[in-house]
Amino acid sequence: MLVLAKPKLVARLLASDFPSENPRTQTRNFSYTNTLPFIDEQNKNEHNLKLKMMKYLQLIVGVLLIGYLIDSFFGNQSPVNKFGFEINIWIQRLFLALGAAGFISMYFTKKKAERKNQRPN
Image (cartoon, rainbow, N blue to C red; front, side, top):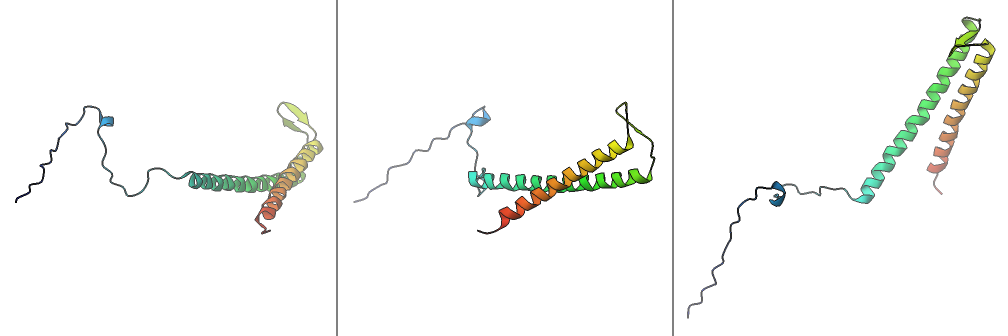
């Protein structure tokens, strides 16, 4: 006795005029999207990098203000004209000293907090 398999019918569909209706063939062997924990970790790393950059920027601004303060002792001793106002040189030096102290203290505060977070418990 001879048994024949049922013939399979294959339908060929025409490609649609709309590209979104045509399925795309997969040519990559990896996912198109990242998982949420990976994205969260990547965002944390970028945020930490920005914080480090800001920390060092504060140190640079503090050092520049100290340099400008020291230069004010050797330069012109007359009152300074800032924003249309005449400011006494000693008041300018006071603001420079306060600004430098503020920026440098922010740098050391952030450095101390970073060091505290890196210590193993």
